[in-house]
Image (tube, rainbow, N blue to C red; front, side):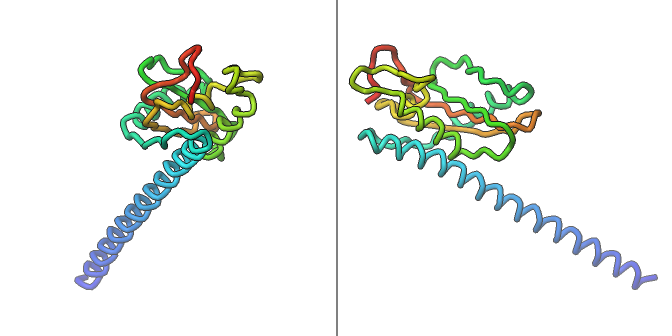
Length: 172
């Protein structure tokens, strides 16, 4: 009987250790994935900014938190509707399925550069305001988030401070 109790105790102890290690590995992987996502957001933004000669953006956890809170409000419908936070600039992205990355969203916004004409400061395509917000000279910080909606689609939001896209002003 004592041997069975000892074996049971050892088994329980090993189960706790395995569970703890599994959680630690999961937390490390989650942190690595979060770090990779932040890197994709910043690299894409700052590469576009460098091309036009404006300073790089810094990551802002408070803006990222706001982006996450707002994105979670879109979880049920995944609709491309902007938040009402007028103190921030905002870019939003929707992609069918969960596979979309931070880099994909940023690349889609950067692609709008083809529609923006600096000399006339106008847009001759479906949209270019995501791009102009990304490269707005006076914007200093960015924070972003990605969620998977109830539909299984991706919703990505970036918040910018100070905001840009002032009518009549050039971004850089």
